[in-house]
Length: 141
Image 1 (cartoon, one colour):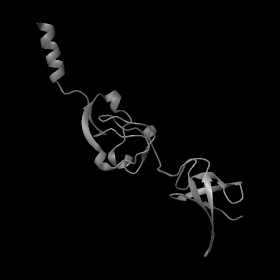
Image 2 (spheres, helix red, strand yellow):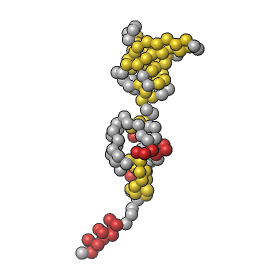
Image 3 (cartoon, one colour):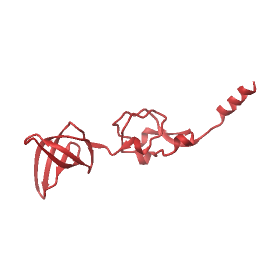
Image 4 (cartoon, one colour):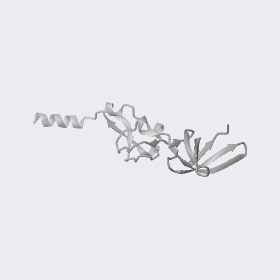
């Protein structure tokens, strides 16, 4: 009987610290918003390194994260504007001049990140920078 009372006392005591956790399960590749979070009391060891809603909002998840789980820096990344294998527009911009060509991304990239693309018109591989969704800009040398 004493063991049962001890179990009830431990279960009733609020343990842990209040930490932001996901309010719903989030799939890989989803962009987080502040509304995806709620607070819960979890063990300090589990709460360590958790990102707050302000830090994680606008970030893309790198893996599936279950509801009630804190989000850590390794769980999110800059949103991908260009995805490997997708068709993109290759743009060479100089002042008011803009030349475009169809291409295919050879890697994923977020805004401002370098990415290699295959120019579909010439079958050449080029280095560029992800500028917008589906657009890679090439610097003129």
